[in-house]
Image 1 (tube, rainbow, N blue to C red):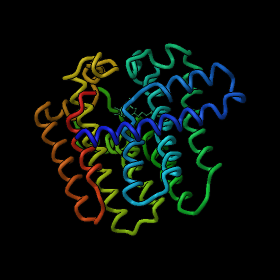
Image 2 (image 1 turned 135 degrees about the vertical axis):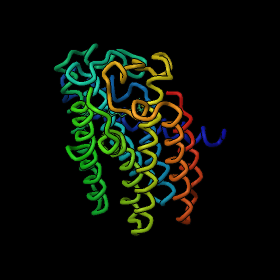
Image 3 (image 1 turned 180 degrees about the horizontal axis):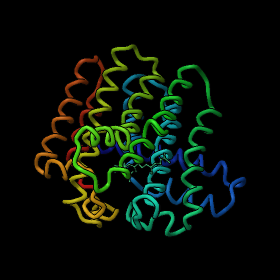
Image 4 (image 1 turned 90 degrees about the vertical axis):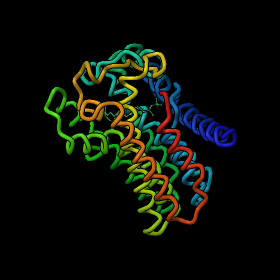
Length: 293
Ligand code: GRG
């Protein structure tokens, strides 16, 4: 376990170093306030689960380390952009994120809007600037698709449209698989694409990512009612207040956790069908189930 945590922290450090480098490289050209607000959210903490998954899956499949670092930074920048927008008054209207005031509280709504769009765009700019081969084009396409109107944005749109609506499991599954699942799945599909993996490996990584994404959001739903704002670094109890469609609303805490565990077990089991050293990805699956923030 100690080894696992050390490796996790090493990936995290590498990702954060890469994001800082990217932000530093455009410093002179971006208005100071906009740059500050992008840095505030892109460099300001977070577990970096998506980036870590990308680095670990890529290493497992034999992708070059420097390439992985760029993609992991990009995935985390896309994620940060979605968090900024998620917190805006016109969306979830929150004030606390990663234990700090939300971006719009510090920099104002207009800046927060641009910081989110800026990080989203910059993530693609950096990847395209360093483009080396066709595999990377496919990987960038996958990232763009998961962040767009058939991915995260679709999930968020349906999430907001379904606040206060009747309970409907099919809709809930679509919301979760897009809002949260898309980027988590992409985090392990991108390295498979970069590695030029065959169909079998690609579908195993997809299946692993799909289960991880669903479990991640179920646990998020549970933590919203069982965690404190201090632990979570964001306002607890928001889902009930907004009458969101969640696993807890549909099934209660215990059943929801049992369902998350099923997805985690499936994620772990599917990795056994490829001949790779998948120990780290299996441990990360367990971590997602047992996380407290
Ligand atoms: C600009 C890409 C983009 C999208 C706009 C606002 C929006 C549409 C989508 C919101 C998507 C969203 C925030 C989903 C919730 C996903 C989720 C569970 C976030 C928390 O992830 P953690 O726990 O956070 O990994 P940290 O802080 O650790 O990174």
